[in-house]
Image (spheres, rainbow, N blue to C red):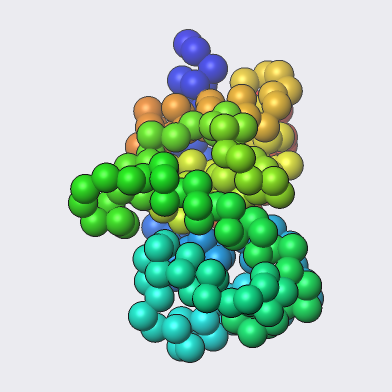
Length: 214
């Protein structure tokens, strides 16, 4: 049995019965999902990211696709002004990530068809290690994986508990990228949607396996 097959069997046993997870983040306009990713990278204060996204959607209901968001950003004289006026942030560092990510994504999915479908296809075809090909400083593996999740890939974000779960099942420690690759392959084999496994469920699965001496 391969490591992916071991992990698939564990996922079926521990998580196959979970209620499908529903999160508005995965159904927001495509442009707003990019904002979700970059705002989640650096929390300026205790205000939830979802509140900022809701406020953006109320103020800019016509900004739904990536080129529209890029045009809005370019309409401001400076990134600092955009950060303050649009995102209600005191400093503009996140806007540099947003600008770079928009430019890269628009090029990466260029082609015919609806934008949301092209983004879904990109997210599903990409692999965790592909984050190294994205020339956007500050995005990292966590941001890249968050983006893939929001656009419909059956994958997960790097997390200490998730990594420990994978290591316990296969019997050896794994680096983040390798663990995520194994999870994607195992989820496909097990027909388990990784997005349905929230942090509480991952922790419960890990503790259950530890208790059983898995």
